[in-house]
Amino acid sequence: MVPENRKVRMEMLRYLARMASRGEGPPSVREVGEAVGLRSSQTAYKHLKKLEEEGYVEREGARRRARGIRLTRKGWEAAGEMPLMGRIAAGRGLEAVALGDEAYSLAAELLGSRSGRRRYLLRVVGQSMIGAHIADGDLLVVEEDEDPPDGEVVVALLRGGEEVTVKRLYREGEMVRLEPENGDHEDIVLLAEDVKIQGRVLYVVHPPRGRR
Image (cartoon, rainbow, N blue to C red; front, side):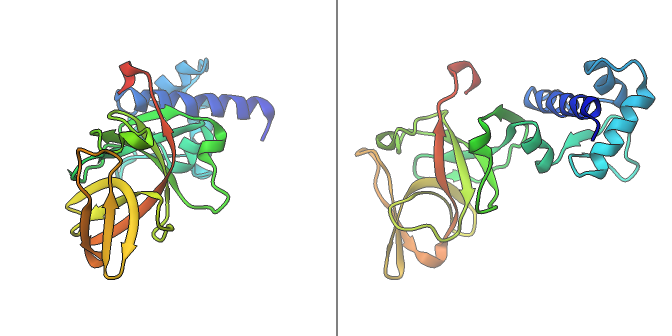
């Protein structure tokens, strides 16, 4: 890629990440072009088309309307940002939800995974893991891992996905114990078949209060 083209396309990816993080919806080709200093919508279209061919962006809908450009996961990673996938309870359990409408800039080492496993962010609700320095409103960098060792802090789906929680994992025969890090909360003990481990927590990000 020509250096000038690479710079423009990276600016486009970062602009799309900022727009998504503000919840402002997908911009038009013209708006993307103007944001990166391009006078011609046709030139902006060519750059976006190339980004689409390379898997960094996609356009919504069967007719691929102009106002429907959004980043793929590859695009988020290239932009140096990570999407917020949902909320997770540091408590008894929270109904599983998917947000996907915010993004946070993170250091490159947090985004990459030598194992090739997917990483994503979840926002914490509650205080049951305060002893592990995980507080209400914190962001967790989670790496997909269905079989982490005992003692790891994990993201677990309970009872077929009805609830999702973050706890410390312990396997005890046919049972799974999910242990909080707060004396005011009790362990969650369920049959192993009622618990599906989604991933393990790698890092805890403490965002400024205004972004929680």
